[in-house]
Image (tube, rainbow, N blue to C red; front, side, top):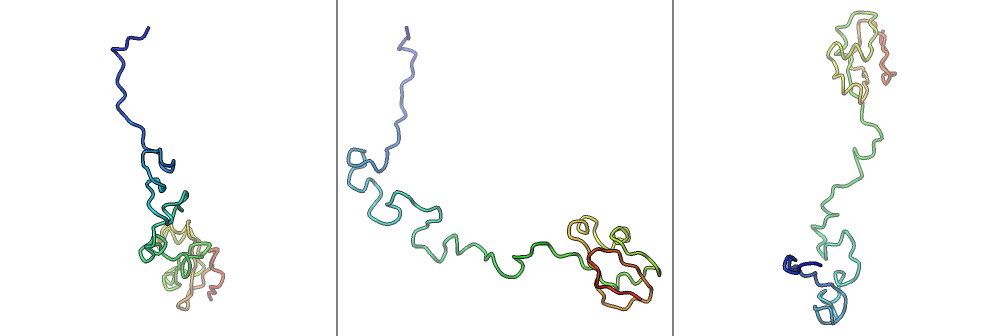
Length: 139
């Protein structure tokens, strides 16, 4: 047998339910939702912010189109031939050599790749084995 003296009293009330007509405790035909408008209906869209169009969330987001948005791969690190002018003739220019010489950062070179661009004529003949540098010709 349960002793009624040790039971706690229930103090918390349940919340009033909306949209259940006159007997719900909210009264009236609108059931506490006001009159008409999108917020008075059963389903409100996630992006709804009323009639506030100028400062709405969609207007505050940056454009997802245009310059710099649609590139499949990040651009490679560019190394100009003027930085390679100090190398000896016949040197094989590889990614490892560029990292060792301190011309490019190791992590960035592995992530993005390296591209050698010609800006000055090289006096020494170099052999390029950097994968994205097919257009560089040295004498």
